[in-house]
Image 1: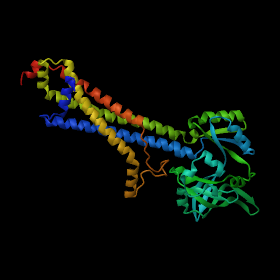
Image 2: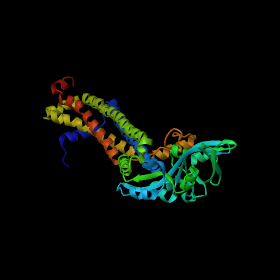
Image 3: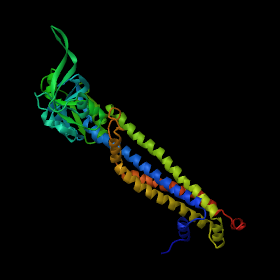
Length: 416
């Protein structure tokens, strides 16, 4: 098979054993350094993609994309829901009522955001069924005063399914004997685990009719409507538009960007900044090729001079060393890509195994919004990393190859 002269000699130089073993060692370390840089970039970007994905699917699958609320309890929420669903970007609507307070059991206390739901309609706007560990959502029947809490809250209170907990509302009841806090006994009918500390530790679900009674409203009155959109990034604009159509003085809209928008934007910004910083690591590894090729050029001055006397042009000499440096870059990038993909696919299981082995949780749900390390490989990230590594390694060959092309045969052979 025909190969150009510069490609033949360049690949021979890559495979050949050099007289100077130090040059071979530097060449090997350059390849390893480039591979490690690619591995680190792929793994870290995959972890950041995992956080982004978990944020969108888990956390934003549990909290409302947007809500419509009024200053007063909403009476005919079914008619309002039908009106809202006429918007083509609204996928589903469900009523809700909320109340903040405390849950107590056997002297233990935990704060809670009690969310009154209609179990049948809640499934249309939430993915809670995917995370239920014990019990069923349908157990939240009206009049039963059942409650479903996160496993973290259950562990803090020391309760399980069937136990009684007391909800203390932030209001008082005035009686002839004085003022007393409003309290209500609930039965734990289930637990769930989302993996997000703020949800597993502080969210409670109960039937919407029971919570309306606790508010001293009529059973069919609700606080607002929860909306699920086809594109959650359009939630702020569409929710505001719906509120305007219904009457800005009567209804107002809230969306997920007010509660979790900063966190989501922080994840996106961190991915960009970390990617840029890690690219500098790849650049350092790629530019190690410069030192390798400079030493190769010095080691091969006699060969370069002979090639020049045999008729090789400066362009061909330059191409020879560009081929050699590019081969180092290609092999380093390929090795890094394969190892990086394998590492990204197994990093979640590896970290979980280390946590189990040492008995320590790296991602504490009290601090981080999820309590495990997610990873999601995206093909475009892998291509971007490999492309950047190859481009940088190619540019790193230009200066040493240019120096090789400027070698004068007579000067190089004078002391041979």
